Image 1 (cartoon, rainbow, N blue to C red):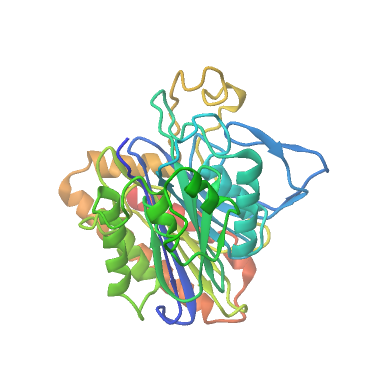
Image 2: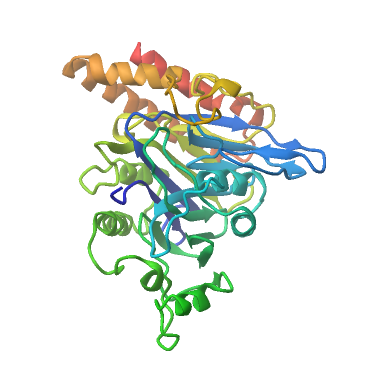
Length: 414
């Protein structure tokens, strides 16, 4: 398939306002795929327990952390999400010279969730992902259906103090540490000569394959990409456009400006067509530990007409209802073999109401809804600023922060 799907961004001081790190991602997936927003609390497990991911079973950790995830509703993993320590991860599809293994293994989206559930910092998440990649590998169909869609993965991992970019081709990988400024990843390898960590056999393997002569400076992207990173392509164009949008707001980056970037259609960041932006996420990660991290999710397609709804990790969070898709258990066609023989209706309540509003109403009605939803979004951004600037905020009042906003959005569609 034509390389497409997803953009992930991070802005660190001094590019941001208020000594914060701002993380953002658009998940670009098949246009008929439902993305759900789910919450899982921390848990402990008996030693030796097994974990069933999308396709394979792996060893379960003895403890997992609380996470909020935006994920295609048919699989176990996630496109993007955050954990209780303020770690955020988004992944991208990338393609390289190494053949993609169709064997079912861990999906890149499984690795996103595992990195969030098992690590309390960005670098620790990096360690989790590369360890699992080495143990179990990556592979399997990344699309619900008979059509095969497989790829390698890159990841942008951020926390309150730094970010890491991890790019993989098969089992080989390179990682770059980001401590300030602006970075984005798209569907092309972007790590060049600034390599802070790498698979121990990455260079030897490149020499063996004849991709690198071992003499000139090693450039991961140039060596492992199936096209020159400098050559314009559909993915490269969007990568460059994303970087331009980040630079436009350099020094003034906020959650609101990140939402603006994710909503931009002219650049292709907010994708339309057979593949489109089916879910979006923006996070505020204050470097001041007295301030909570805040994570906004849409749970609906097209951020330009969706509401970014805030979430803060506090005790007593209850499972979400109106952004969670129906569960089919062992009868799910993803679990039955052969897989994907049928395709059930996975739409959750918010998705249905959003879809009805934007596909059946008259233009004048849609305009009125858009005005009201964007007013709601702005109100929530202002509410979050009050919370961030009030060290004595009441944590118990935030338990229903996300579901309450979902209800307010639903009332607009009514």
